[in-house]
Length: 365
Image (cartoon, rainbow, N blue to C red; front, top):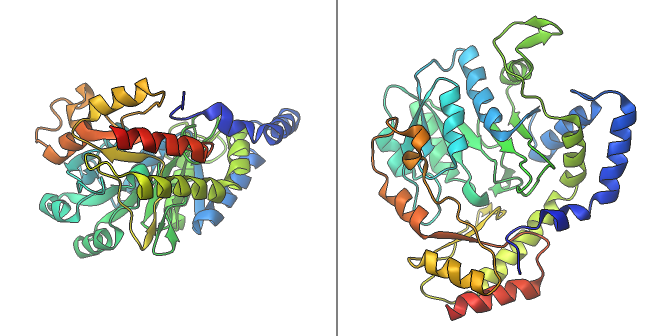
């Protein structure tokens, strides 16, 4: 059986280093907002080439905290509209809602799965104040055109980079493309923790200070809460694990890219649409997501051949019970994508032999 993702196999490589960090952690006597968090924040800021990196409890909180901080700074107000892709994971939209803002869903481009700037223009109103661009599956959004839109309409441009650790646009890494960026380090990510974890990157000193306070009960110093904050602190032990794995992230991404190239070069089934990539960017393939009108049949066929696949995502946000009544429009491209997509195994511990086996079965379908 070829697993879609084998976290045990992935993390076994770091077992000795993990155990060393656990020993250091246990004997440090400092378990919340300690040196491991500071070390990882500095390392990730350096990785993204940003001035600031602020650890959070998870990726959803990272999105929410960015918007909450912009509200405190006066750049956003309750009820402002935030444009977001209709086919993203629901966390992107929940982060907007939890900050008291209004998500405005926009259909993506069919071939990239990311925001379509032409459709974004149609949704901009006097209440639109920001764009939350999701780099879905590891591919950077159409950044040049989104920047032009943001500048023309004086909008904040925020990255949801939860699936795009180390992805590039014209030489710049995600996390350093917009006004701020939210990352998730959920265990399945290219850079995955051993539990929940997230981070915000930005070059704004004012925003960073507000987020540092907001994530820790709104405290500007111990026991002095200036703002109505939340508890969303990156766990020290997870930060220690993430620092170890961050040192290997370029190698991890390179292996995923090599696997994707094998798929690109050898998949020849005309019924299957392959993911696209930009020549002036770097896709890091958090998912290798194909598309076919016979998705359910293909998924069942691959399972019968010992190949595990997943759907990212089978139910779009506008059809989720939690958002019933909030979104009243139809999103035909999003619905088409959700009915046709299928994610293939792509993680760094796959062998070339396994990739070629998957390709052989796909070409025979």
